[in-house]
Image 1 (cartoon, rainbow, N blue to C red):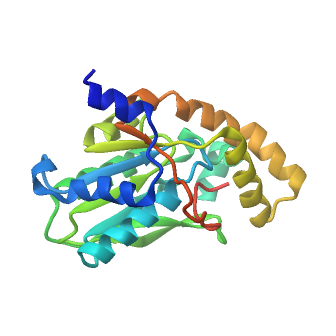
Image 2 (cartoon, rainbow, N blue to C red):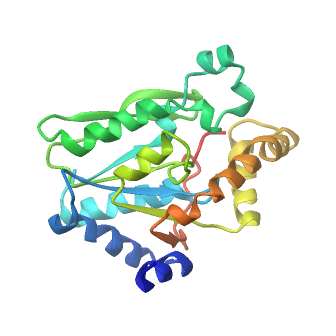
Length: 238
């Protein structure tokens, strides 16, 4: 392993301006292998992935012009509740099996090569507790797509194929106690009692997070959201 790559994996970048600068390097055409650049953000639930992704997109578009960067969350590819019920997975929402992972992979492949049409990506509506089609758009002039989700670094198919499409993959790190506090706030704000929120974290978020941590070695660098404001509506679904 090169020394630069080793250092990137072991020392977390926290300064928001530095993180924007690192993402901006991917706007340079010399870094693009084919089509657009794709930057992935991964990490356990509550680490701040969506907060960082939205911050990077906002700042890059402010500096470079609207539509330069676009956002594609994995959460938009959650199976609808009716499908989770059919599969017996409602109680494991947020686990790998609860996503249309192949659909997510197909969209990322399309994003890398299709340059002459608007490409729409789904998002997740927390009030509805459902994915919603067409929330996000990748425009023909978009140069960088920032995508985030729990499992982008994991070795199993199709996550390994997702990783192969990403020019860089950052591991968003937060201490477990910090993540736990964020997750409690998130779930209680979403309507769960504190007791139900604790049960959900223990039985679902925590095992999902431990699985996510196994992918750290596949990441380009480790980052932290630092003092970025946490969006109460962001993050992985409960």
